[in-house]
Length: 333
Ligand SMILES: Nc1ncnc2c1ncn2[C@@H]1O[C@H](COP(=O)(O)OP(=O)(O)O)[C@@H](O)[C@H]1O
Ligand code: SF4
Ligand SMILES: [Mg+2]
Image (tube, rainbow, N blue to C red; front, side):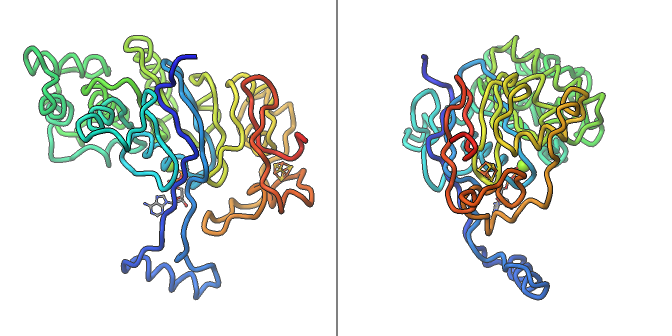
């Protein structure tokens, strides 16, 4: 097998206690309402390993707070790991020289949920999209030719390049975010809930744009979503995360036909599809536990309809249950 474009090896991320005024206030409130005080360490990501092959689209799915964005940020090199390694084309990014690290960072771009929050409102589209490639000396011909090509590729009319972000619709703003990311000629995109804030009809347009760009530019994606339904049609494989850990990984079709992990089965029951509903999975009961104080053993045991005594004691191993299909559940023993 060729070297994966991105590989995570036993990556963990912990957020330590913070001491600013907001954190102190949160601690006081929590104590007053009898909740565990948020002054401990959060294990946002706990021993996560996976690899993404060039040209592949990998979906990363799980409920809010399970650590998806933290994984995405570490992949994109905008947040360091606490433990473990992130490799880009077989080389550990953290150990590269400053120049090489900057290069690798440009090759991995991130697209965010809220394009408005991630676009500087005081800059014109021409600056938002054109600035980085200009600074990095990527523009060989004329600036305007380069800029117009970037905008057209993302489905934007170059006639509007003098405008500001607020003069565009939500879908168009996401296209600006995409044009900005692609303008620095990346080969890997981390799309973090990139369509979650958009109307359903616009979601479909943006998802189609991602798939067209994949073909046109040979891009590789880590596609993060809380919604299994969103990743179904565009991912080759899916990683399911629960409270900082990957609990199942498989080719997308396998996940939908033969989900192994009870958590994945519960997620599937929430996807509004007739076929899934017919399978009558048990819906996820109970609230997602706090990552500050995750349940012992299998993190899912308080909500799992199949939980056994050992589930609250032993962490289940992540094992292959079929070719290319891994799951962490004691039911597989
Ligand atoms: N910068 C941070 N400082 C402290 N805690 C954080 C920070 N970023 C994320 N977290 C915590 O880490 C956990 C995972 O967050 P996140 O990666 O954003 O999850 P998701 O994207 O799946 O919703 C959450 O409990 C969140 O509160
Ligand atoms: S290990 Fe136990 S609690 Fe965890 S998913 Fe499997 S059966 Fe459920
Ligand atoms: Mg997130």
